[in-house]
Length: 201
Length: 238
Image (cartoon, rainbow over all chains, first blue to last red):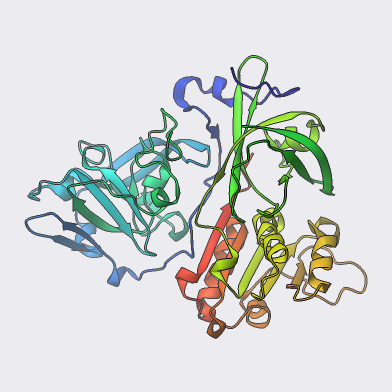
């Protein structure tokens, strides 16, 4: 039985949105920014995306080559562990399925790595079969640096820290290993419907 | 975990500190936060994160809350909560935006508005532990009246080995004000911040545009990106 807060009634956004808002989340209209350090500004001519680790042959795309890959439009809700949710966001990006096409591997997990030494860990099955993208546009425009531009991971079914900003590639692995926030007490998996915010949830 | 509200302190017209007595508080580090969860009679819940303002050395936990326009949780905490009420919370949370004495100094703290809260925990921790690590605070407020912890900052600054506290007032300034009267920028930081050669660690907390501007300016001044730690809050914090 939860403790009742005397005199609290609340705004009830959750009831207005039916079942779209996961437990403990509230709606925002804007797009809050959270990151651990300064925003990196990697020039596009120095940018690349790589698939490394337990692969028969590592792969790397330049910005130009990446731009030539087929893109998908994604309309989705996003949910941050700091409790804001934003509904009906629109993105454009390259499906991870496209990036892994023809890549021979026996991996079970990926560690996404980004400019600024940020990493986050994900089970491989959570980034394939149309569940994750490397997004390069938001709301019809190139992704702004403070929101992770030029490219960020988009894994909308997990808390948004898993959608690593400024992503530069994947390390394919045969085991799970904590990334940046995961090593500071955040949950290894981050299922937002089971409210896996912190270690032990 | 339940905390009992023992005291409410009005810091500014829109900002209130809540002093909590928590029987089994596991302890925290300066810079960490707690999740506060409110539950209505019918079971409806809302939760938000708030930075801890008190030093780990203090017996009671202090959080400081700014009332946001239309804020679901902040308007309850600043407007409705009374001494004797209980508050459900969880924490401490976060392990990156923290400072402990053993991490050494010097410290550069840059705060915008209520972004001062976790940085105040660091200054209080520094004072309680009497470390010799140098500290400078650059604190941007809209007006003199909106400076949170103003008197305590004055006391700390005038104490032995106190931090250097530099205010900037961006909207209105009291008569005779000789301090900065603009947003924090590169020129101000070049004057006020430790030079990078001193090996400082920077902690920046405030609204997103503020943090973006300050972090970029410090990197331009020569601070390594890894020495600049940021914590941001949007205007939508609730």
